[in-house]
Image (cartoon, rainbow, N blue to C red):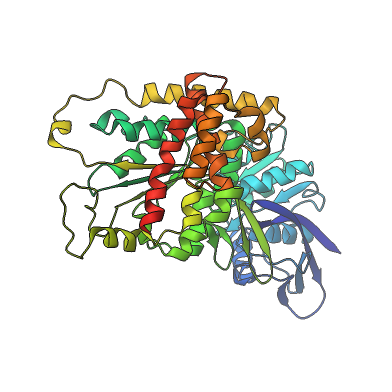
Length: 512
C-alpha cells in the first residue's frame, strides 16, 4: 500500500504541488528517496530516522521507498522532512492513514523529533488555500501561514509527538493567529538634514511617484543621509503590497518569527555585490536584492564602483518590474518593482563640482568623464530624477533645524499616492499604484499638457534630444508634481521642473 502526503516545491514565489508517495514493502531493509532530490532532500533519510526513534517509533526492517512526484521537477530544501516522516507514520499505523488527506505539509526535522522553521511557508499556505487544503507546518511559522486566509485550517506543531497527539485527539492544537512585527518609530528624520532644500524636494517627488533618483555630489554633502531618510516619508505597505513582499521574504527565509512587517524595505548592498546577489540566482535561484526591495527602496551608494555588468543587469527590471532568473534546468521569475536611489561622486577625486578645484589627475573634465562613463547611457535614461547635491557649508550647519520634518512631507506623499491609486483603479489598472509604473498608453489620458506646456515639451525634446523613454518619464514626473499640488492639468511650470531634473543627465552623458 502506498501512503500519499501533499507538499510543495518552489519555483520563484510560486508553490507547485508535490505528491510524496511512501511505500513500506517486504524486502531487504533500505530507505530510498527518488524523484530528483537534491543533497538536502537525500539527507532527510537520517533526519527522519533519528526523529522517529526520538519520538518512540522505530522504522520497520523493510524496504522503504519515497517517491517525490512529479519526478522531473527538481526538489530542493529541507522542508520535505516532515511530509516524509508523517507519511511513514501513517504507513506504519502511528497515525490514522486518512489523517493527512486534505493537508499540505512542510517542515524540517531535528534529530530529537522537533520541527524547525523553513522558508516559503506563506506561498505554500496560499497555494494550499487555493487547492482548498489545510496546512501542517512548524509552530514558528504558524503566524506567517495564517495570513493566507482566515478560513484555512492550520496545524502548527513544534514536534512530531504533538502532531500525533493532535490526530489522536489527546492534544488539540489551536489555530495560530497572524502577527505584525512591532516597529519602533524611526529615529531618522528629514529634520536632521541642514540645508539641501532642493535635494529634499527631489526626495519628496521620488517618494510621491515612485521615481528613480540619482544624487551626484562631493563626499560628505549628505547623499547617504538623504537616502537613509527616504523610508521615513514613504506610506506603509497596502495589504496587497504586504502580501507580495512577504511571499518574496518567505521564500528567501527572511521572515523572523512568522511576523510580517508593514514597513517598506530599504536594501543597501555594498558595491562589491555580484550579479547573482543583486538580481538573484545561485544554485537554488534565490531572490536577489532587487526582489527583496520590491515595493520599497534599493539604495546603491558609490554607483560607479559597482561592476558595470551588474549595473546593466538592472536595466530590464527597472523597465518591467520583474526579473527572470534562468538556469539550465529551470527558469523562475521574481517581482522587482522597486525605487532605485543611487549616489555618486562627480569624479574619482570627488571635488569636481567645487569652484576653483584643480584635479591632480589632469584636466577636470577628463577626470569626470573617466569616472562617469562607467555608468551606461541606457541605465541613466531609466532614472527619472538626477540632481546635484552641493557641499554643505558651515553657515548651513549652524542653522536651526527645519520646521518641516518627515511627518509633514510624508503626509503630502501619502495624499499624492492616494490620488494615484484612485486614478489607476478608475482606469482599470489595478496593478498600477504609482505614476512611475503608468504604461505609456495611459499617459495620453492622465498626463496631457496644456498648450503652453506642450510647446515647452516639444522644444525641450528637440534641444535635449529626449528618447521616447525619456519623453514619457518627463510626463510621469510632471504628473507627480501636479498630484503633489492637487492639480488636474499639467501646466508649463510642472513640465519645466520635470525637465530640469534631466538636465544633469545630459551633462553626464556629454562628459562620458
